[in-house]
Image 1 (cartoon, helix red, strand yellow):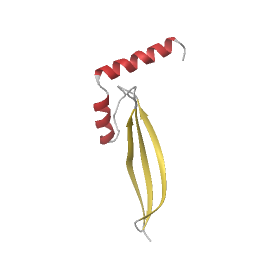
Image 2: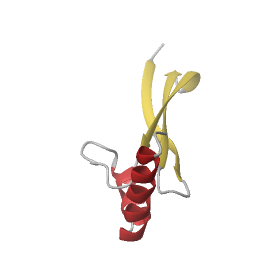
Image 3: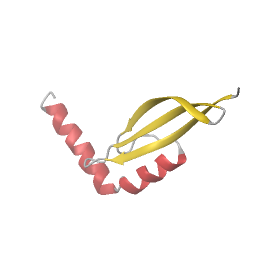
Image 4: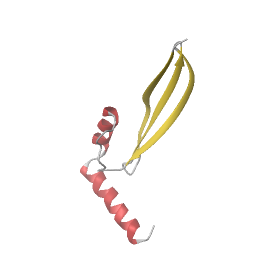
Length: 85
């Protein structure tokens, strides 16, 4: 009986405001058959430091985070802070 654990990014989503969400699945396999799976979700906001993030997630962030998206996100955050949200 061989137990193995694999981790994969199985879902990446870019939202309207530029936030990138991704899900990492951890799969436990027994003799090649999956017997368990858990998920860990992460969100990244425009212009956030991407150090240590998976390469495929960084590629999506770099594509989604144009200068316009970053500026709009920062303006929305500033407006929300002024309103006390």
